[in-house]
Image (cartoon, rainbow, N blue to C red):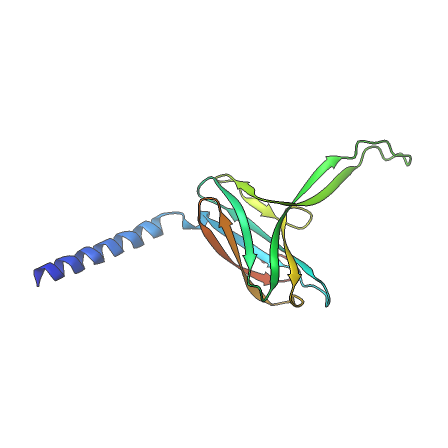
Length: 162
C-alpha cells in the first residue's frame, strides 16, 4: 500500500511541477496571433490568410494546410519590393515594384515575429471548395522544421481581429 501511495504522490508532485513550470514559462512565445481571412465572392477559387507568428526557438515554417473541406492546398507567398530601375517618361522617377511568389519556407528568429499581412507575406488558399463568408472559422495547421506543429483558429473577417 505504501508503494502505491508513494507512486501516486510522485505522480501528483510531477503533475504539480509541470503545471507550475507551464505557468511560469512564456508559453505564448510559440504562437500565432490575429489569424484571419478575407471573405471571398462566389466563384472565387482562392483566398488568403494573414497572421502574426512568433517562436521561442530559431525555427523554419515549412508547411501550411487546412482541411480539404476548405481548400485543396495552402501556399506560402512572399512579397518583395524592388526598385523599378528604369526611367519614366511621366517625371515620376524610379518606382518600386511589388512582386509576389510562392516560397518553400520562412525562417523565424527568436523574438522576431513573422507577419503575414495585406500587401505583404501571406498564405494563399488554393482551390476553395466554397466561398469564405463573414464569421466562418476554420483551422490552419503550420508545420516547422523542428517537427513542431501549431494549430491556428482562423476567422473570416473584413479586418484583422482586435
